[in-house]
Amino acid sequence: MHHPKKSAEEIRTVRWPDFLRDWAADYEINDSQRLSLINLIDSVYYFLEDSTQSVEAHSDQVCRMLDQMADVIANDSVFEFTLMMRATADNFWAQSPRDERILQCDCSSESISRLMDWQTIYTPDIELMCYTIIPTSWQTPWHFANMILTMEKDDEEPLASFVITNYENFQMDSVQIAFYDSTYTVADVLYEDEVFVDSSSAAGGVKTLLLPYKYLIRILSHSASVSVAYKTTEGWYSMRGFPQRNFKKNLNDCPRLKKTSDQITRW
Image 1 (cartoon, rainbow, N blue to C red):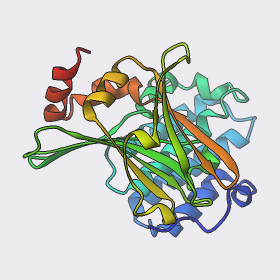
Image 2 (cartoon, rainbow, N blue to C red):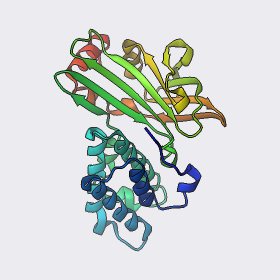
Image 3 (cartoon, helix red, strand yellow):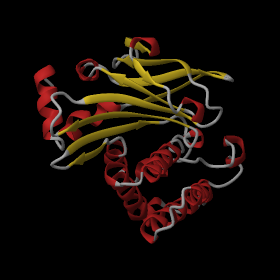
Image 4 (cartoon, one colour):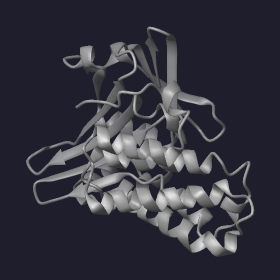
């Protein structure tokens, strides 16, 4: 896997849709369907950049964009494109405090929830659920973490892991995964030295932490958010996500994972 050549500081000088096109080119994402979604995002951003435009004239366009982005996040087979859409969702909603037209769109409340979906894969041979935690949109190409649950047909118990990426300076020491309740109080912290860590790709900026499935399900059942933090060459770096928000709903798409989860805790 490669990563964008430009730094986070450099991309802030361009429009977000133009950055998406560069990002797609870096990963050779050039099919018409995915590029058409980037074009739709571009047109929505042109609307946002013109304060004279009314929300009534563009609400359908905004809702179509958000709906397609949510479908990508939940179902697209190209991980890099799902990452791009999560970052776009973050970038888009971050503008809402400065532009009330965003929240006036008919679909605004529903789409916020859908854009926090897990990606689920269910086949006769394997079930997989993946939630990607990202920092701010502009830093997403370099820093992200995947929370992954998998179960193959012959497995007695699912596997749980965090795959954590730092493509900026490649160093991730003293990884900490903190779980917070609804009042943002720390419910539990998992430290790198408490679990098995696959560091075989650490030189390239990737570490995998393998967790007990029972532990992760129990802590997900009574926490509201998760943060991933680690030491880099520039100091501590952290990012937070909300995988619990749609976990129960998305778990229904994976019956074997759900059966095992139901045996561990009652939702």
